[in-house]
Image: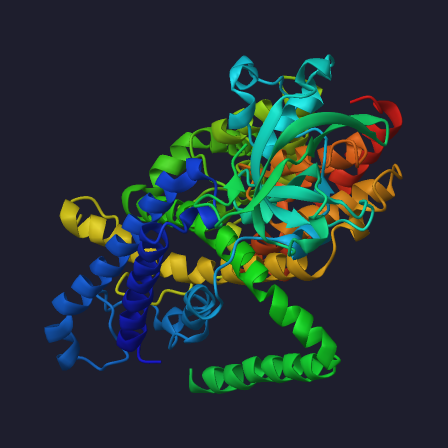
Length: 257
Length: 337
């Protein structure tokens, strides 16, 4: 490929990637991919991409006059250096960086759901963070707690009786595990520490007489008193649902621990 | 010149053709499953790409800054001549350059060209993704200030220094390194003669131009690595690996394989490792934390761009064997870690 064409493509792709990230941010879908605490990094990365692309456009503009005089294959400022390293650049590496754009535009975006949960396994308890539960979390009202909060509390607390009967109010997608009873499902969320690659699925057991009528991956809001049940020797929370209401996919489908 | 570009193109097409042949042999049912999971694949791919791209961009900017603003004398003055002190210093440079495994490769390559000794550079390459303040706090917040944190840092440093020392016999980095293919306006070697320095604005333009070049050169490995990791996660159930979680040796191997395949950034891998505590033996968790930042799909692809085959093998094999050994020893002698 002609080096100038190569450079034009470099600038074009860098700017396109920048606009793609801008689009992801402005459409509110950034949190479908990464934890919110890294959002500023993404913005910074976008700015760098724009700067790199604009700088290359500027290079091309400033050297245009020079380039018409020269052999189009030789574009370097320094006449003395070795041209062996400056072989005609191949287009392949450039095309690979178009892949994120193609994947972003051609495959419909959707937060992870039951398929991914099935392949990773859903935790109903377990060590999510080794640290103690922060006192702040224990002060939150029961109806403010997310699936993650409930599992954390049950993971860290020994005297769980005080939580028995509190009314939970959680949002999650419907996940059915073959080991569950016919009137049960898991109200599940993915927790994302950094990006979707490290997502792990969490679920709260829900007992609801019309469980069978719920579609897999449907997002629901579950309200009802919490009961303590034992599973594999561990105490886990279960919601005796009084109401299960269909809701839209939340703006932040993942929880950020 | 012409012959090499003629030889190159059919090889790429050949790979595509082979891939196509493998793909059409799959039964059609699989395609329905694959199509249904494509959105998950896209989510994970874009998750890794969007998360890692800023770090890669910082690395390429750092690399451009080193190329334009660092002189060879500066590095020669800062890094001790003798191999061992130089290598130890190299393993600690991550404290000053907090780059993760995406950014460290382009930066190291530029520093080699500025006269960084091979052994110090290899130690930097392997240690920097862990021996830096960001990863220290991430690991501490996941595992607390305990033995896991101490062992992760001690082993990462030890392995980086050990592997670096293997290269101390090399006279010049060029023995082990592939040349940097320059493609832009920036000549392969910017003249650093005193008095002939271009104006500051011009030098910043050079930094950005180098950074763009390196973004494309290294970015493709990020794309390939993210594709493989996302495909792995989408189409292969993790329970398969988890099923072998407790054997004292097998579990270590399994977690190391997982580290390679997941290709998660070192700044967050401790949180991922936390998800495996209890399922996997402590030695396996430690091996994951030590080996993962040194060797994973995207890092290996980037290393392969920089090093010739034999040095590349050393850089993969030594950390592999030493992490495996450490993991197994922990399982036998510190099972309560």
